[in-house]
Length: 312
Ligand code: FO1
Image (tube, rainbow, N blue to C red):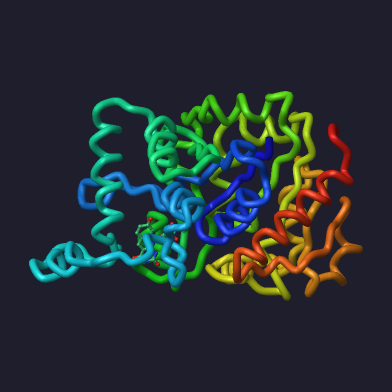
């Protein structure tokens, strides 16, 4: 069994590569839910949905989020009657939010609902939220403290970032299946996908018990760099690093995880950084434009993990 930790679009690409090269039922993806929010009365879980759509092969290939071939009648009508229209919910996607909201209100766990949905989408990897409890990423900026989707979508990541908070993390319990998977004797490795360290991986690590479980798990833990050629492939990672006064370098990301990872996958464009990373490093082409690229990187990551030894 391989466990992948992932945020949305970038992480889902490597999760899909792992999904395609591993035997059925050998992958568990632990997903950030710090991006979740209540919008138009609905529980939206962007990263969970991105993972399910991407593994099922029905994600929108242009945006990375939402569904392929989506229609937008709901948004058009909503905008026409003066409703809140900055966050785009496609007609098919909307059905998932409506059903999730109904079932969570009826008392179902987010994990149980997500497992049911991924099975109905024909996905044979487990997709687990980091927690069933609400943890909400807040972005401290020069325009004030913003809820994550307000910063990311409504303000297009323009405000200057000064820090992050994960509201609710102190009281949140890790999803029981996540802790069980990290303790399972069949666990071969944990892979941190090339997701944003601040708003995708850190929220997962903020859930009490998860970081310690990663540090204490018997299998090797490796991270794949979200920095390629001294920049982020997509999204605000590099902008955030600059605004926080960090060098936009893969080595700075490796250092953030140094207390619990055993190896780091560096992009070939940043090969000269290897000497500055105090752990085993593997160098690969980490850009994933196609399924062939995703499978190639997944294969390289699994090969690297095997060189680190079966147990720590
Ligand atoms: N991202 C956008 O940039 N604009 C949107 O309107 C938008 C809508 C949306 C709807 C459903 C969903 O699951 C994701 C959506 N996203 C949108 C992506 C999402 O905001 C971010 O990619 C993640 O939260 C970051 O991982």
